[in-house]
Length: 116
Image (cartoon, rainbow, N blue to C red; front, side):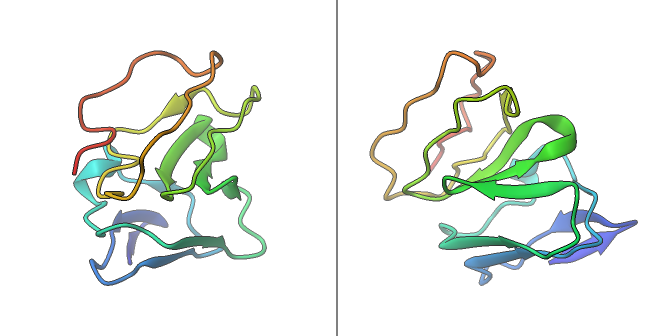
């Protein structure tokens, strides 16, 4: 993972287990430009990071109320803390068969959301 000004700007293709450092404050957008990992297996947010959290297999950017990335068994949270799904959030999760998108998510679904 590479950070610039505490913003995640690239991910190593071999990093299947993503650890978000406590000093990370954001992600370069669109996420699909940096998310070339062939299927994440886990997400961990280091203690002390107030900008990201993990819930139900989703890595969520708290400040933007956005799912940044999801695992193959992710369940999109049905609460007001998540309003968007980033472009490419489920890209390269080839084992993902089905996911329910709750009504609270804004319906701007991009074609690259589930690519590959």
